[in-house]
Structure formats: structure tokens, C-alpha cells
Amino acid sequence: MLVEDSPDILDTMSEFLCIHAFDVLAIAHPFDALQQAASFNADVYVLDIGLPGMDGYHLVQQLRQLDTNNARFIALTGYGQRSDKARALMAGFDVHFTKPVNTQVLLGTLHAAASMGLSSKNY
Image 1 (cartoon, one colour):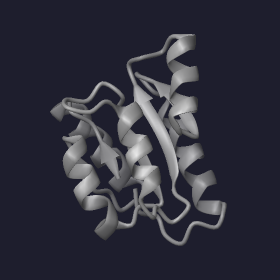
Image 2: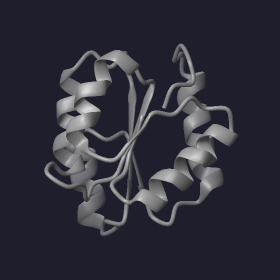
Image 3: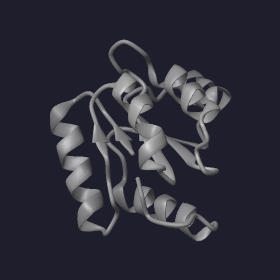
Image 4: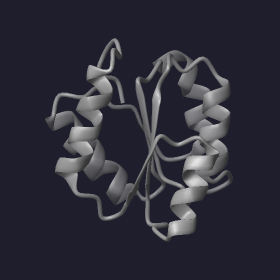
């Protein structure tokens, strides 16, 4: 699952992941992400932090409370200060990437998550 409020980034990142053979549910609003999380059963969540209505720190905490199939959580955000990274990890993210992301590193991280025993390539 990809959660990003910028339409351009959401579309571009979603298309990029689809090109690389990932099944992506692209969502612009965190409350929609919570609603869809149970039925989509994502292996990896790629979340922006600066979201409307609920920031990514709170969203990751809410998603972790759901049955997320031992999902991995990746922050993909413009917030790149050392304190932002520490806060992301404390909130429940497994990995923190600052925009603009190195797409090869992101793909490597997604493939590593898939090789850790995740059942499918749903993101």
C-alpha cells in the first residue's frame, strides 16, 4: 500500500512500482488507508509522513495495531532531519527514506522485504 497526498508523487510512484511487478494500492488519504488495510492485506506499507488529517507517524501506529501480516513499514517523506528519522523509527517505521528517494535503494528494500518470507508482492 502506498499512501501519499501529493497526486503527482502518488501517480509516479505507483506507476514505478507497478512497472517493477508490484501490486500497488495507491491511496491519498490516511483514513482511506486505514479503511482499506484489512481487505488489501499489504506486505509493505510505503507512507508519507506529512499527510492531511493524520500524519504518517500516527498512521503507522494505527496500521500496526491491525493485523498487518507482519508487514514492513517504510516512511517515504520530505522530513529528513535526524530527529525526523528517529521519530519515524520510534513511531513504528522499519525504514526511513527522504524524498527524493534513490529508486534503486527503494527497490532493493522492497525486494528484501519480499525475500523475508512475505507471501506476495502487495504494496
